[in-house]
Image (cartoon, rainbow, N blue to C red; front, top):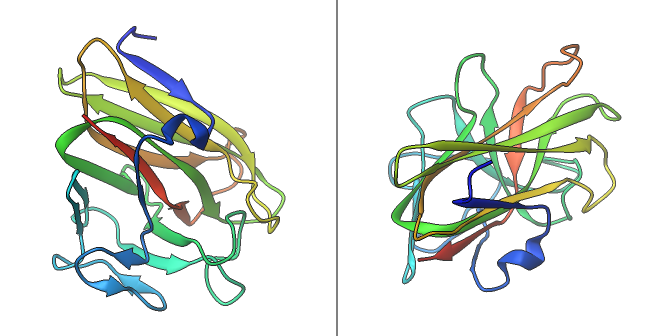
Length: 188
């Protein structure tokens, strides 16, 4: 691992950051139901900077964690960003403008309840290098149990983009969608 990135497993490490609820778009207002992201919805702009969702890859949509929608291991009512998990594609891919000092979220998926999964995060720094981090979770309906993964920069480096994925460590299950809940990002 590089001295330029420190990885985290706790949202507490991002208390100094901005908290983004995917279903509460700062420019468009609440996104009710299952909403596919379009050009008009892909940018979440704050005074501290912007987060842009890559919609040129697999389909990406926003929902809320509930028994009628995404019903896995996030807290009920949380905004959820869902990316279709297609082979060779980045299911959830985000860009930061301006670059940020840190980013983190809980990661889950759509698939068979009870299956263990590897939540992956890769951050690209402003020097062009990618840094991978992973955490293990178990897909369940127990609220708040998804693993949190995050990254903070050091040595004057910044994060320009990040992607999230979920894989079966035993290569037996294909998770149909990758999900992240509220996103924490730390302005530079």
